[in-house]
Amino acid sequence: MHTSYISSLVIILIHVSPTDLHKAMFSPDFENTTADPNSIRTLNNILESINEKVAVPSQISFESDYGDAYTQSTQKHFFLEKMRDKTLKIVVPAVEPPYVNYVNFSDAAVTEKGYGPGVVIEILKEIGKRLNLTYEIIPASGSTWGEYLNGSWTGAFGQLVRGEVDLLAGGAIMEYDRSVISDLTYPFQFEPTGIMIRSPEKYEDDTLLIVTEPFSWEVWVITAAVILISGVIFLGMTNIMGRVYKEMSVTPFESIWVFFSIFVQQGLPEQPRSWSCRVLVALWWLASITLSATFTGSLVALFAVDKTNLPFQNIDQLVRLIKQGRFEIVMDENSFTRTEMIARSKLPVYRDLWHEMILNHKVKYVNGVSRGVAFVRANPGYALLGPMATLNFYAYSDCKVILLNDGILPVYLSIPMQKHSIYSSYFSTKIREMVERGFTQKWIADYRSYVAMQKINECNSTTTGPKRGASLGTVLFIGEFVFKFLKGKMNKGADTKPFEEITTVSPNSVQNVASIDNPYVIQLLDPHPINDPIENWSLRRRNILNLSLDLSRIAN
Image (cartoon, rainbow, N blue to C red; front, side, top):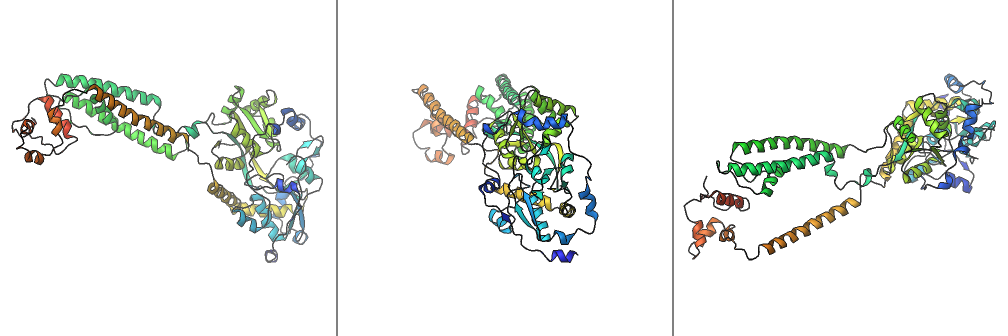
């Protein structure tokens, strides 16, 4: 039996009605949409069917064999001869990646576009090859999925109930009302409802001072204050100890610079002599090691881990913000299943959310998930509720929006078929095999890889940071020249010490010019050491810049 239908694999012939509606409907990948205010419907129009379902019992007869698609999957006989070489009419309710990326069953389209048509289309392609099926695409009528309104079904499910199509090519949420009027295949995906918001402003343009992010501003302020206070204490200690231990002499600026050098892990030009000053410097070294290790670890984590300050972390916090008037909900008007789940839920958090939606009108409906993403992207203070996997690809390709990790309202997705269809059991069996063997997850992962390669917007980047950094550097560069110029004007006319004129001369050069009638050169060659502590400190400080200077005359 298996050999007979495996050997009959042939290329699928697709018949698509060449209408403009098809071209507009089945455009591949994400649509470039904008937040159109005219596409937002009012709450009263949207909730008519929801209120009818919640308040009035449904007129549909619920005497059905729900689950036949699963129980019959164990049967050995699938009426293969009756199912082969047929043409099935299908309708695509919506293009929702990664389940329906585009509608084209040919392998050439995959090569041309660089990515697959989506999980649902891949499933139909595989089953079509096994049964030599031909798919005829029928345009969708009304709203995409449809709803039960005024005693009848509209949209794609209405076409399925009326027998106009054989199946719906899309990931339909499994619910009891739909199972009554259609056969729902084995679920190919377990999917929660995602919450998408606009990325916080800090996430995209606060990178000029990113090196300060490891510490809070309180830590930086306290550190700067401690450096200043320690510099003042060190200045006083050196002045007092200079009379007893011939301690190093420093200016107020040099005293502060000592502790700043320790903070940035730099060495000192001269070590203090007194034990009091040494203990103070040693304690600062120990503190700087701890601060440096903490700063380094936090900075590495900052670059390695995505850290974004979100306005809320879960549905409970979102509902709290909605009550405060800081957020509103955005949903797709073409699928009311998630709205019904919120309305029928008995959990307190969803009852509070439904209260805000129906009484305070804290919800907006847009035409399609792509328009919902565009609306949230352009307007802060809105949270889009939609299929997690679909929103994940939008968030993955555009850093202007962000998707929360935790989802809500989990559902199963399946392919709806006509009630009591002879294909239901066969489709369910093959879908189960594909799910168990990991094909559905592979198709999703392949499309995710394509989105990653085609991503245009680079997250964690900015164009304002380099401009500000260049401006700050230019100001500091010019300011230094201005400071030197003003300092030169103030010191103009002052006598320059002759010693400074030859501090950069090496000992050999000094010996070569010793015969020159210059008393200051002779002073350098004088073998008697200089006992003045101030002059000693001056020579030691100059030796930092000129290591060739002979310091043999400096008293120890």
